[in-house]
Image (cartoon, rainbow, N blue to C red; front, side, top):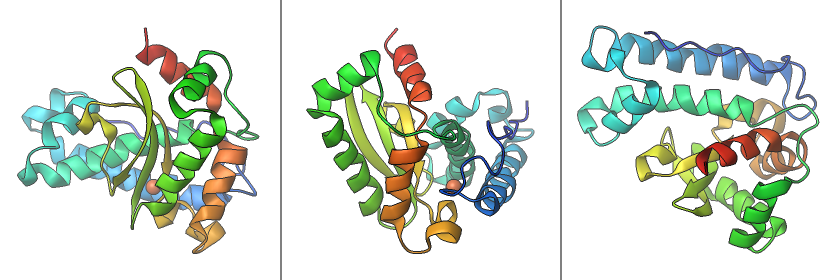
Length: 201
Ligand code: FE2
């Protein structure tokens, strides 16, 4: 069954002035849509067509001859996840069990912020910064291009797209400014907390 391009969980103008309507139109309607279409076209009529997109990502990750499918599957999934990681008037700090776990594993929220900013800023070229659950420990990681923490056996809780198409219209070369706004004004901690709760059931 074809993977559906999700609609954005907010209006195209909802993240302004941090992320403009124009960025979301290009990023969602062009880039994300293309990954979804390419993924669906690539698996149509193959044995992968009956698998979930998460399964396809795991199956194709280790097979170089399926790199094209992997890249489009992972990018389709990563973007669907990324949209939910943001909300209007987001940012701030998490609460409850997630906040406790961040304090325990990073030594405080500020330490997490520092690690996440560094991961995003130091990802050379295109990729993603992540907060993941690895076993029973929270970790900050970064991945290049389409890669996704599933391939390392980790559970994604939060992601930030650091491909230039995510921020260049609004921030040009100032990736650290985009990262600062993402953490300070956009992160949907309720979504991250839901992911954490589901991963620790
Ligand atoms: Fe992107």
